[in-house]
Amino acid sequence: MNLSRAFYADPAVHAHPQDCCTCAAPTAKKIAGKVAYHGDFWLRSDFRRKGIPTIMAAVLRGASLAMWAPDFVCGLAERWLLEKGVLAQYGHAHYEHGGSILHLVEENIVDHDLLVWLTGDELRGLVADYDRNEPASAS
Image 1 (tube, helix red, strand yellow):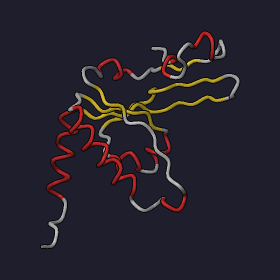
Image 2 (cartoon, helix red, strand yellow):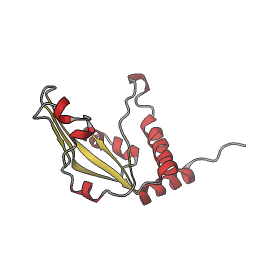
Image 3 (cartoon, helix red, strand yellow):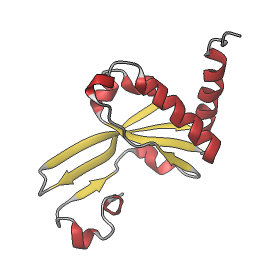
Image 4 (cartoon, helix red, strand yellow):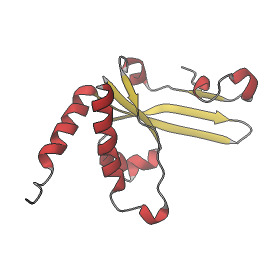
């Protein structure tokens, strides 16, 4: 599946003729219905290692469920996020290589990201479990 239109309104006009972005992850063909895409966010260095990914993931899951009740939540992740345990902090239950294979000729970029996803049932379970695992607030 060629994903060039995700980057350019008109790839024939704006992209290098040899630029391409494909998805080779077999599961991508099974992700259908109402799908919420969770994109990227970057933190300033002084905000890192303070648990913000866990907080942001919970907010994204809750907002996605409340606003869209998706059948799937998916995203693209760099491999180092898996190796460092960050994907687990985000609550992604599944990952697969080949989510995004990006080649940009003029920028000299070759990138291979993972496809990460949750089913709608897993999303609902994470949101429900989050409420149960929170300590009761002091009265």
